[in-house]
Image 1 (cartoon, rainbow, N blue to C red):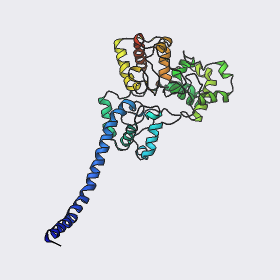
Image 2 (image 1 turned 180 degrees about the vertical axis):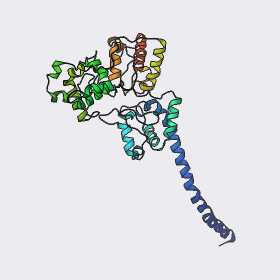
Image 3 (image 1 turned 90 degrees about the vertical axis):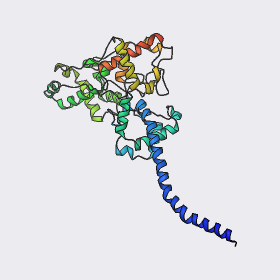
Image 4 (image 1 turned 30 degrees about the vertical axis):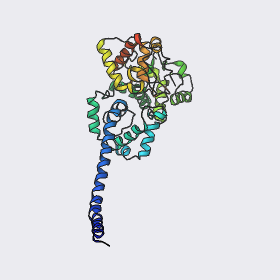
Length: 356
C-alpha cells in the first residue's frame, strides 16, 4: 500500500472516530429542536382557528362553558393523538360536538386536524385566552335565570316541596326560554300549564322529554338531564297549579317586536362573529355545519319573537344549541336586530329546515 493511500485511510478513520461521535451528540438536540419548532408552529397556527371556531363553546382558555367540557385538563391533554383526532374529525353523537373534518362535512383539512391535536396537548391556555381576547372573540359570560330565595321558601311550605324545588330549578335553567313565563307558552312552544297535558300518563311525558319531538324545537334531554331531574320536572308539570298559587313567577322571555338601532345591530354583528359565524358562515351565508340565516325566505316568514326563541332555545336534531341561559336579553335582541337588518338585501335561499 502506498503512502498516499495510507494517509487517506488514516484520515478516513480519524473522521469516523472524531466526527461521528460529535454528530451523534448533536443530532438528538437537532431533532428535539425540529420537534419543538413543529409544536410551536402547530400551536400558533391553531390558536386563531380555535378562537374563531371553538372558544364560543369550550371557553377562551379552554375552561369549558355550561355543559361543554373543558379542554385545559390533564384528562384531555393525555388522550392519545388518535383519539383526539377522531373526536375533532368526526364529532361526538348526541352532543353539540360537530364533525370538523372536511371529509366529514366540516371545514378543517387533515393537516389542520393534526395541528389541533398537537395544539390541545401542547398549548399554553393562558396565552390562548389572551389571544382570544385580542381578537375580540371572548365568549359572553353565562347568564342563568335565577330562582329567588322567596320562590324556594314558598315551595318549602308545600307537601313534597323538595322535588318541586328541583323541578323548578331545572325548568328555570332549561325550559322557560321556550315555554315562557309561568309555563304559558310562546310563539314556538306550547304551554305546559295545560289540563290536556296533565291528563296524559306520566310515562308518556317523560318519553317526550327524553326523546324530544321531531319537527319542533323540543330537543332530546336524556343526555343532558339526569333521570331524577327529568322526573322532578315532569312532577312539576302535574303540580303546576300549586306552583302558581304560591306566587312563583319567571322572567318573561318572549319578545314580540325587537327594537332596532345602529348600535344594537353593530353589537349583534360583533356577537354573531363570536358565537355564530363558525357554523352559519361569514355574513350568515351558511356552511357545511349549519344553514344560511342571511336568507330572504327565512327572514320574511319568521317573526322577531320566533327568531329570538330559536336562538334562545336551540333547534332539536341539529347542532344549534340553546343560548337562552348563556346570553342576556340584550344579547339575544342584538342578534335578532342584526339578522333582521340583512333582510332587504338577503338572497332567496331555501330556508333552514328545523329538526334536520
